[in-house]
Length: 135
Image (cartoon, rainbow, N blue to C red):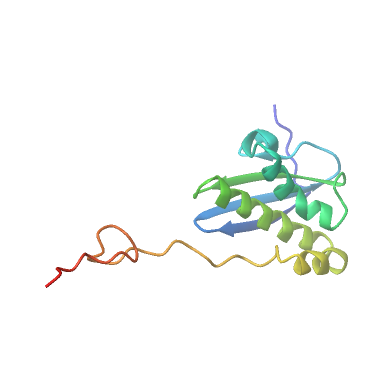
């Protein structure tokens, strides 16, 4: 049976069409994403470096852990959304000490780049033009 925890800081992170809901807990614990461990959900060195980066920047790797629900987009968009959410939650945890470092690393800013919509008459792509006749 799960025990109910309410001592957390909540933040949302977004990237492309992915959005994450992050709960930041104080203390030692295992970080999870959608019920799996983070290493299971984002395997490999790149994933580990990315999601631990906000904790390393403010030097609190063993003092906090997270529980994340993420949906939409692909794995890379989801990873960026999780990082954005963790950074926002950390900045809420200790605004004076954590925010400047996170701001300098540019992970508090939501990345506005999204997929370009496809236009009518372009044959299924956003910028492709139909081939014109030679004469």
